[in-house]
Amino acid sequence: MITLKGENIYLRALEPEDLDFVFTIENNEEIWEVSNTQTPYSRFLIHQYLENAHQDIYIAKQLRLAICKNDTFEAIGLIDLFDFDPKNKRAGIGIVIQNQIDRNQGVGKESLALLINYSFKQLDLHQLYANIGVDNEPSLKLFTTFGFQKIGTKKDWNYSNHRFNDEYMFQLINTTQ
Image (tube, rainbow, N blue to C red; front, side):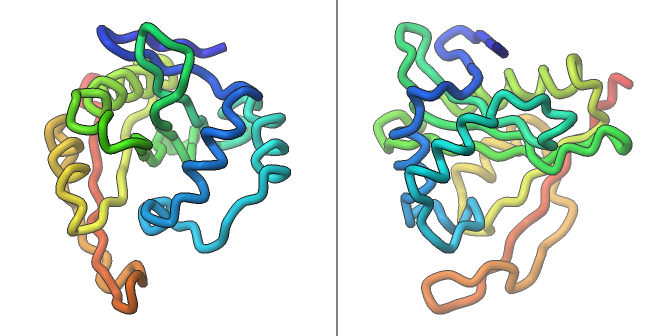
């Protein structure tokens, strides 16, 4: 089991007990735009996903971790590496904190710091990238805090609320390699 511990939170592998939490996150229409989801997920599909969540990142090409406060096992968010490409040493990264009350508390910042460190030191990645909607101010602030640089704008990339929205692509290069 992967456990990455910070001062206030830790990241852990998904467990079968996370079924309700992942089901709630995946079916929250408010975040569908950032997760590129268009239809609800059934409990059966989430259950199957959790059964396979133990797969090695080199096989699954992704790693999804639960974000938990240090004093509890209960997940408050998810942080992902996706499109894992070991040949080119890169991956996409995304994060979601479920409840508004847990946002703007440093949880995202600490989680992102842990996963960036893991990605560069353990997985030996050269770069991480993030796709962020132009109106997603909290994510823009979070990622630029860690040195992610905007490398482009995808025009009319996402369709939401009866209009097309632009999306930025951000990149962080591991300069210690």
